Length: 567
Image (cartoon, rainbow, N blue to C red):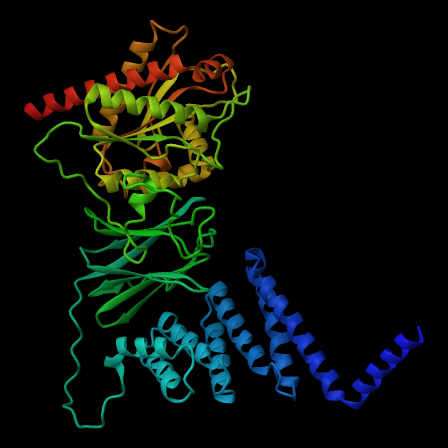
């Protein structure tokens, strides 16, 4: 005991003899507490919506930097203050918040040129100059400071690279030039409107254009991922807001500005990096940007996850052939000399973490649809002598959008998505087939909401965006395909099973059918919520008979298409 007391006394004497040691420890502790508050704020999207939460952290950082006479951690605090103002400007949309971020970054570089944070601060300052104020000259000067005023750091190469892109904005030599006014580059069109639709899995942004305009998509990763699209030889309509908040968990806000005489830039600030797709629609002219959440288990920068053993024809293998920096354009199959149906993609609904509907006896939709999809693939290959690919051949989760993306990529002629229906009314039963279009009744909207994993309100919002998809989706062909499959199922199954009910062909805004460039349908093969049909769904006999019925329907559809083609 006496020995321990001597050690404690010795430590106290040492600390009293060297007060600077104690002071340094206190400064470090204070800084860590504030930094933890800042990190906690970044981790809560709800807290970020409240301005006072940002201001509280900023005030503590600025007070720490101002009162810290030793200079210890002062550059760190000023850098975090700049980041906090920067984050607040994104949340608030206020240019004055962005200017305070610029001031904090500039002060850090000026006061602490040897700090390893100064070059990062000036890079961020340049981003604000470009994206918030469309000031390319200011951005050029920030990058120039990194290369000339600061010691070589880890951002030197990045600054040099960006300087090359902005080289035309370097200060011009002092020579006399004629007093003739500069001619602006001729504009080919105008960005007239920006529309947004959100779902739990992805956000769609539609850029309405006055005419056909060339565009260049880009992506920036890092802590604050962004996607931006440059519209070439275009300008903003005067009534478009320069900042539009979204905050749907995928996109936080959309910013737009006339970048220079030849470009208009639309910037999407993302909450997390994920895969994206940009494509053009015509009549009227639009550019559509789809941004999707990364699949569970993927890294933020990966976009589309790679399956462990993805084969050449697997969905993961196909989609990962295209790097994220150059998203795949929608592929419209170009038929060769061999007419008819050459390739069909069969989609087993749900999978992995998404079980789909669950019956009273715990039968899961994802299991019976996979079993049925495999049987349908065998039946199609035998009955139509065509190639068949499955979106999934095991129990794995696939985002809805990636299923039709796969079908587009491989150039499928048809897309068939298999599902099992469900209802709160346990007595409901029967067969129905859907194709993509505006829903005509509440029941169809309810089925779409369940299969999409969304609310009825979100389905209503989705219908508005469907007008943008009509040019890409083969609605008439899908309607005929759905009718033939529905009639074949009812006609073929009625003699073999009791109480087969024809619920008909319906239209609905289904996510799994969005973006398909070939005739596509969603087949509800039975009600898993009905005790009799749940039991039926699990049997090999019923699964095989449904598969054979669908093959008959596709044969009838092919014959109909051939008859129409010969007229």
